[in-house]
Length: 309
Image 1 (cartoon, rainbow, N blue to C red):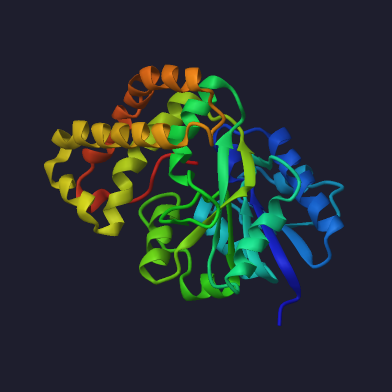
Image 2 (cartoon, one colour):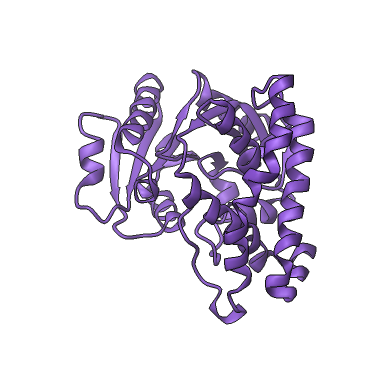
C-alpha cells in the first residue's frame, strides 16, 4: 500500500542553467495548490542547489511542499533521490522552469495511467512560453511530442512526465553519459513492452532558455543521445567530426517533418508556419558547434554533458 496516491517532484537544478527563482516559485505555487485541493497528493522539492537553503526560501509558506536535500547532485541524481523519498503510487515530474498551462494538468496524467491500469507512463506536452520565435524553438526541442493523446512515443520531456511506481521499479531511470536520461529511458520502456503514451492535455509552458547556451547543449545532446543506445544512428559516430553535417541534416529533416505535421499543435498559423519553414535552417544551424564538440570527444572520455533541458 502507498501512503499517498500522487507524488509531484520539482527540482532546483534549472536555477543553475539560467532559470529564475520567480518561475520556480510559480511552479511550486501551482503544485502546492493541486496538493491542497486534492487529497493524497504530496509535493517534493529536490534541492540540488549549491547555495544553502535555496529550496527552503523558495518554498517558504507552501505547506504542502516538502524540501529534500539533494545538495550538489546532478539532474537525474536529484530526481532519483526524490523518488526514493517519495510515498506515492504515481510519480510525476514537473521541472522548476515549467508551469501547468491550464487546470486539469495532473488529472490528465492520471487518466492516461489509470486507463491502462497503471502499466504505462504518461508523456505530457511541453512548449516554450508563447511567441513566434519560441514556437519555432518548441518544434525544434519538443517536436517529438506531437501526436494525439494515447499515441505511443519513444521519448519524453523529463520536465513533464508521470510514471506508475511499478513502471519505474521495472524500468528505473538509467545511468547515462548524458545529464538527462529521458531519451534512453523512453527507448528502454518501448523495448520492454511498456511504451509511454502521449497526454496532450497535460500541457506545461516552459520558461525560455538562454539561446546560445541551450543550442550548444541541444547540439551536444543530438550526438550524446547515441552514445548509450547502440541504435542504427550510432554507427555514424565512427566518422568523428566529418559526421557533423550528417547530424545537422538529420535534425533539420525531422524539423520539417514535425513542422509539416504538427504546426497547428504548437499554435502556429498557416502563414507563421510558412515563415518558420524559412527560418528553421538558420536556427538549427546554431546547434552545429555543440554537435561538433560532442563528435570531437574520443570514446574513452564520453562522460557528462554541459547544461541541459
